[in-house]
Length: 141
Image (cartoon, rainbow, N blue to C red; front, side, top):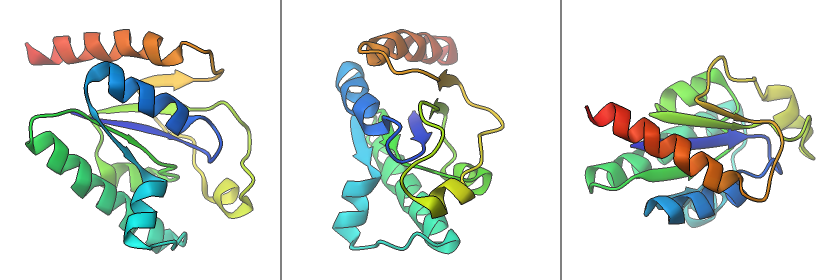
């Protein structure tokens, strides 16, 4: 299973993804760490599509190994979300704009998501854990 936690920079994606991955016994894949590892700081439309494909490749590898992948990255457009092909999407909608104007202009609100976080709470990861666990159990049948 691939869980995408997406939203504007500074919305709390990593803050949610890391403890959620720990609770699920999943592998956390963070876009900033991946960009640093690949030394790829291309934030053009093409660069963002390449990053979505790279994140998909890494997450698919985790899933093939029998684990859950919790992936956090901006994933700013419907196209990048389609390229990533998450099984479950969390939209961190906790801020109206980021400090990056180009990302603000490019970002498209998702047409669908499985869990919408409008306000951050200290236990959001635990609340989401229950939702994801139920989702996993329903889809095993």
